[in-house]
Amino acid sequence: MNKSDFYQEARNDLPGPLAGIVVVEATTTWAGPMAGCVLADFGATVIKVEHPEGEVMRRLPPFVPGTRLSVMQEVVNRNKQNLSLSLKDPEGRDIFLELCRGADIVIENFKPGTLAGWGVGYQHVREVKPDIVYVSISGFGQFGPYSDRPGYDPIAQNFTGWSSLNGDPDGAPTKAPTFLGDDLGGLHGALGAMGALLHRQRTGEGQHVDIALTDGLIFQSNGWLTIGAMGLPTERWGNQFAVAAPVNSYVCTDGRVFAGVLLDSHWKTFCAHIGRDDLAGLNGGERIQRRAEVDQIFAQWCITRSTREAVDTLNGLGLAVTRVNTFAESAQHEHVKARDMLQPTTLTNGNEIPLTGPAAKFSRTPTRVRSPAPSLGQHTETWLQRLGYTAEQISDLRSRGII
Image (tube, rainbow, N blue to C red; front, side, top):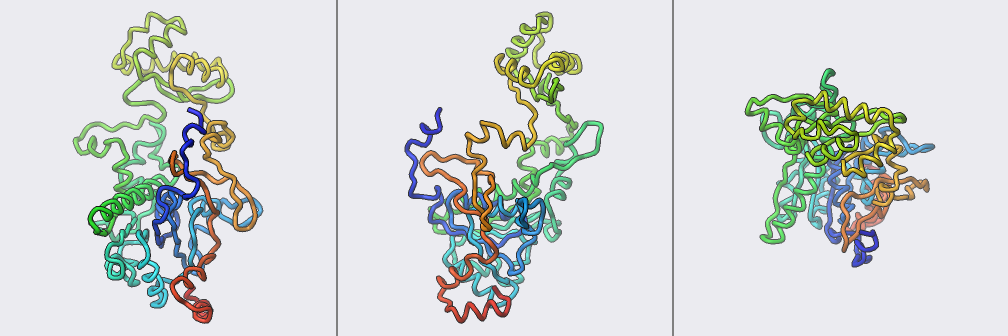
């Protein structure tokens, strides 16, 4: 399908499918901001409430070359508005609650009980907005023996058992190179918010949505918790695949490819290509039993070829295969560009960088990076004026460090 065919009925008058939904986001670092990012990408108006001194994400490297703008901050807070506010101050609390009065969703990812202690927890917000959808994201959730513990992404990866299966079979347990627990927590936070919104639409009822990083990782672990609960063996496979062979990362003359055989028909086709009809009859279970042998045959075929030759040949045979790319190489790939996964965006300081684009594609209500991550407090006056504050009142709040 051509891109133009997919978008032939697209509307250009809406920012996305969630146009008109208002989100108040009181978050820090990644999991909470990721939930807000998804909703903002989908077209919601997301107001990030940030401490007047700025949250930690603004100070984390790497930085956009020649600036002090954090790349992670720019990526996860695009398409949002920003209001600087001290929630610990009673006047800051009152402003936050007034914002929530006109909101559909609140997202927060502080340690359980923190926002309630400041007077802006779920029970406080529902007093001013009874049908609010209030999403809390934390390491271990709002209840349970560990709910009062701090829990960051690598803690979640190692607590759940996820890290125990990652890495080289002969090496140590290894965390993911990305904030996997935070990313999944953010995605489930956004999904939970949309599910609760649909329920509210049908019944008029709001609710508290509880997301734990640990729960998100466990849910997305392909049944490994169930396997562990039944006492079945769990093995670390590295680049190999427990349920199929040969599957691995294979050395070529100019790099590596990742390839494998899942179907018996593909194995027969590959054997015919390399002239090994004597092995063509091996079914999936037999190939697993002879894993080392069939893996070595595949490796010997790859090692004399370039990555391009290996990819083109195996792809032509119908096998799943890719060159093992770096992120720098992926960023230059024609397919990544065609999918709009990099979108040139002018930042608040005037620099233009390629920001990672939204993943979901909507044929009727397309999504895109509409605006850069806002500067700290960029929209504070706008929202306070909408709440009825005068210029003198806003100046007084600023002089006292509340905004």
